Image (cartoon, rainbow, N blue to C red; front, side, top):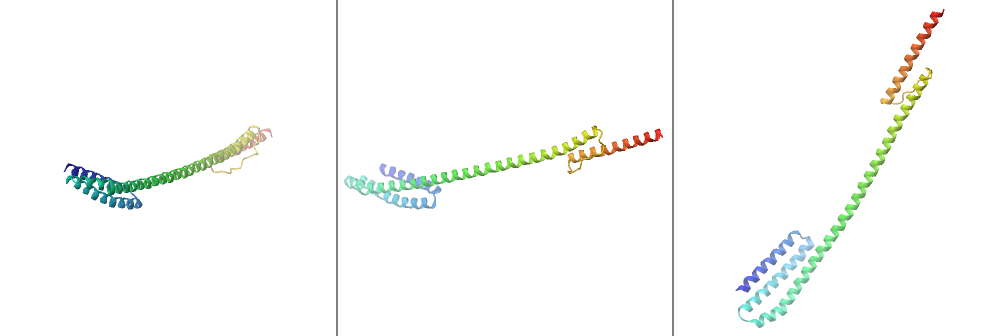
Length: 193
């Protein structure tokens, strides 16, 4: 009676393990597990028969069944378990390789996007600095000409940003200085005659 109870517990534990495997198995894995379940049921029947032989004092029959059919069934079960484990291992290896390829391609795409962003940012910075420096250079040349006494020059306003406004203010200043100089020259002409 004790052997029978122990065999039942072992059967229940094995069934629970197969059910847990089945929950996460693929379609091909489920087919292997279905075959394993069928073989397991056959083995349980043989195991039950062996326990029955032992409990009815038919030890020779129990030994013969255990070393014959029972041993063959256990070997078949072991092969099916190994096949299932190998299949699952190969699928894990395939999934790992696939995820590594995805990681590599994602990393490459990210590096390309960062590179393109850096090139765009660098190009924008150069374009802005050239635009600002050209406008400031024109404003500087104009103020130097005014400082040298040349009130005939003006700078063309080519942009509508802060640099363009600065050049417009410098042009307006030059225009006012011309007016002041013209007024002073006219006043000097009126005084001398």
